[in-house]
Picture 1 (cartoon, rainbow, N blue to C red):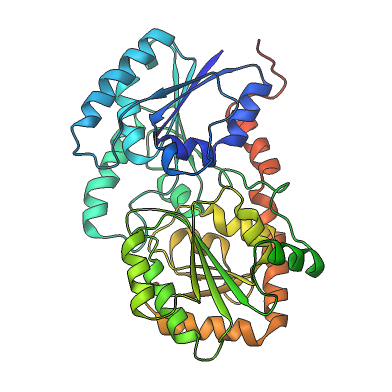
Picture 2 (cartoon, helix red, strand yellow; picture 1 turned 180 degrees about the vertical axis):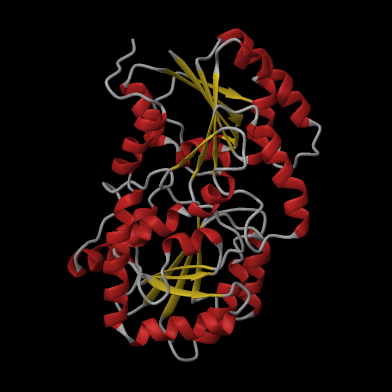
Length: 378
């Protein structure tokens, strides 16, 4: 039995599909990956435990000519390898894969698609609704199983899309890597990473781009530093906005309070030493970094969006604010700085909630969706 996993970029597979790959290999499947190779941008990130990796020149913009080349290459690959299941991800990668797999599907290949957050959602622009909703609805007809990872997405399409729709609690956060540590161990890790025990540390993890909106957080730090001199924002990730964000930090004269970590494969260390996880993104599917922070028993301050609301219950597991409100973010940061008991309560509540989103639980859900129970292939 042979499975092909596709996405626009290889880092997507490497970051979000380890549980699926592990499960398929355990059941005896041969696993191939087809996506654009961008791993050179992600320091140390690798696709592990697969049989073949193919560099397919997908582009995130649907209007790029490379997507025509990607379609042709992918179609030939599918014809050659005769996959039993093709599991696609990401909007552009998903559409191209479904089209390329059209003939194979007539011959018995099953096509699965994981929607990591539809571009149409409550609060999305009219343009997004007009473009992406009909496109996803049409392409659902080329799909045997559609997997959603937020309840909002599931509820919206379960009765209106012409395919089998499933809900899954994310892609699986590694509970063996992300877990709470004692104050003593946290202090040791801080010392190893050269951070002071006195610092009030915030972590923001994600690609440096307009959607992730690190600007709001940087402005919030420039406000917060007046009342929290030892505040420290650690920004993990890389991306197109890196130089612009660094210039912004320099202009605000808060270089001592904002550190750019770059892309980190050991993000768990930073989650374990931080006081709060922060995110001000405009749009999210189901953010893995927030689940990882919750597994570490950390409170969250986040912007109001679909993915954040799925995880962060305001005044229970963390605090929510509008994305473009640096002053409000600064107020919420100060609130958690002054009230350690709130950090503890929100952290414990979040850790309890995060149990549904662990690798262990996701493997159970994938086993059901793939109908793998009791089967062994070789």
